[in-house]
Image (tube, rainbow, N blue to C red; front, side, top):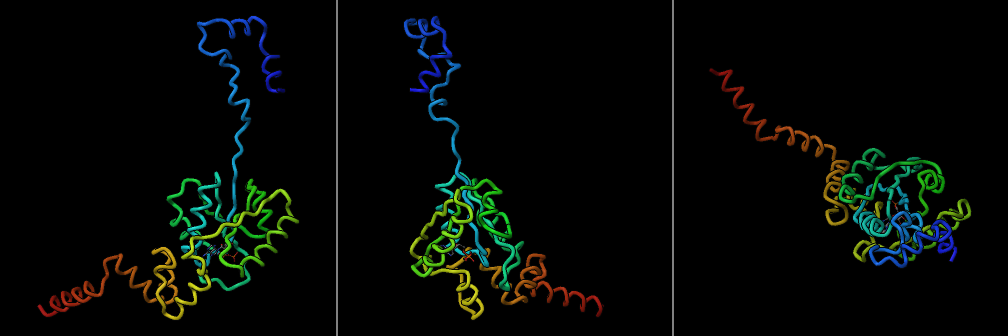
Length: 234
Ligand code: ADP
C-alpha cells in the first residue's frame, strides 16, 4: 500500500489518464517507475565464510564447499593462520591447494586470517559462518563454538551442512595418520593434495618429481653418463 502511494504521488493526473486510458501505450506505468525493482528492493547477497585449518584439505572439505557454493552468493574459504598445532602444510601451501581445488567455482575464494572468526567474517562483510558436521561427535564442539560466536557477534548466523555419506568419517587428521603409516589416501583427498602429502612424507619423492618434470629422469641421467664416458674414451 505504501508503495502504491509513493508511486502515485510521483505521477501527475495527466500521466495517470494517459497511462490508464490510452490504448496506444503498451504499459500503464511509465518506464521511469520500474515497479518490479521497487517491489523487490535492493537484492540481498549472502556471503558466507567457511573457516578451518584444512591441513590438508580433503574431499570432505571439497564436498562442503560445493554445497555451500550452491546456496550462498559468495563463499570465502578462510584458512586459520594462528594455529597452536604443528601443521603438516604451511598456510601458503594449503592456500595453493585450496585455490587449485576450487578454481572451478566462480563464487568461491580462498583467504587466510588470524584471530576471531566472527571478527574476520564481519570485516569481509559475511553474514554466515559455514561449518561441517560429520557425526554426533562433531556436534557438541560445533554447537559450543556456534553459541559462543553468536554471543560475540549476534548478527552472524552459523550454518551447518552435512557432507555426502562417504565423507562422513573423513578428517584431515585421519588423512595425515594414514599417510604417515604408508596407507593409500587417493580416495580421501584430491589427486593434487595426495601428491603433496606423499612428498611431505617422503621428501625424496619431491626431488624425483621435480627432476622428472625437468627431464632429469634416471634413464636420461644414465644415458647422459654413457655419452660422457664414450666421449672420454674417443
Ligand atoms: P578445524 O580445525 O576448524 O576443525 P578443519 O579443517 O578440520 O578445521 O575443519 C573445518 C570445517 O570443516 C569444520 O567445520 C569441520 O567440521 C568441517 N569438516 C572437516 N572434514 C569434513 C568432512 N569430511 N565432511 C564435512 N565437513 C568436514
